[in-house]
Image (cartoon, rainbow, N blue to C red; front, top):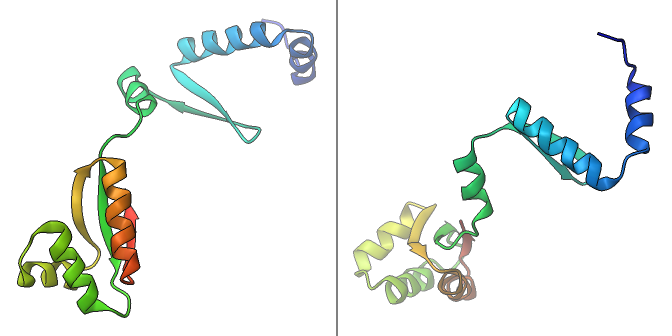
Length: 129
């Protein structure tokens, strides 16, 4: 095996087209069972399997609304949680008391944003995950 320097590799790559380099990267990914991604000019490699890659490609469709902090208006937050969830007073208070807590789970993005807006209007801090 010949000793090829890093500079020789860089020189060789400099004379290739983007399409040729792309094909080379795909071959290396297959041969070494890795995924190379370019992020802000950095190349990150990681091992992967095909099912994980497919899950990452699909856009997230279910979201959880999480109460992160109650803020100064605890009673207003409890009332809003009752309105949103249909829970009773004690159950709503229990959700507020054990912050962080999930308010709604596996809902669409639009609904999650609406709930977040309502709760933030009464002083709560909400995360959508």
